[in-house]
Length: 413
Image (tube, rainbow, N blue to C red):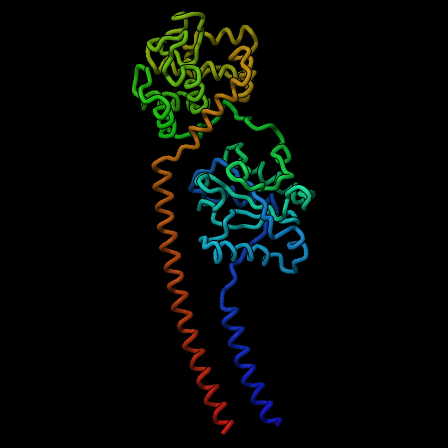
């Protein structure tokens, strides 16, 4: 009896070992946590190869804050999300770039240079944040160190990526994500649309040209579409004015270069400078000089520093006379100053600018496609190597099993 019990125990122990081996054969994907400050410092040193213009915000719904707080191993909560995303949803990695936990830590996720699985159809230029918790009304509250961490993170990302676009998942979905209890003013210190007039252009030449021709395939200008876009970017760069902002304003002022108002197409006046009545407005000898005047006038509103190049803007001295020099830091500050009464004038410019920036470029599309192929090839190679390793492990296991069975049979005899 004792001998039989001992043999049974040996057999059960072996098959228990086999069960544990098969169940635990998967290697755990590791995740690292940071303070907000250390994560932002890490991000600034990172070689980011793709363009990011939007910050997407989500809540996990599940796991909840309670799940995370009660977990003895916090990393396993993040790992659980990774397993769900990769094993159930069949994604290549965890969907988000970072996860903000209830203790205010930032957990790393998907490679920043890979587009996230964030909002269907809107992922190309996104940075995705997941907040652990269910923040629908009547459920958990986003508060304390977690809320503080999310706010600091968003503020830091705005600075790093030169954007102010915070997107809630529910804006493009029927979901309540990131929670029906949350509004954008919780996360942003200053109102949105605070886009500075001065600075480097974010939109590319290709995007600017593409959007102009999308709205008006036959712009009534005295140069090519390619040239007008180049003039705005080059002249803007010289004076420190965002050429894409000035171009968006020109599209608004000229009706996408259809004209039809006071200014005539052959006047090369793209900003309505000195416009009084039909045909009575400032005229410039060439499109380039017209763009230069526009850039100088816009700089006059935004900066107390005089233009670098000789002044060709006939209205620049008017700004000096009425004390408007340097009075408009942001595009929306032009309301009631550039345009009178000007309600929503700056917002209209920004609406055009946002549409320009949102257009995908050929380079972006090719880059995304190439990265996707490389990533897929890498994944296939990794899976192939894992399969080979698994086969070897099973061969060893099979040999062990055969020996155990042989020993068991010998003992039994």
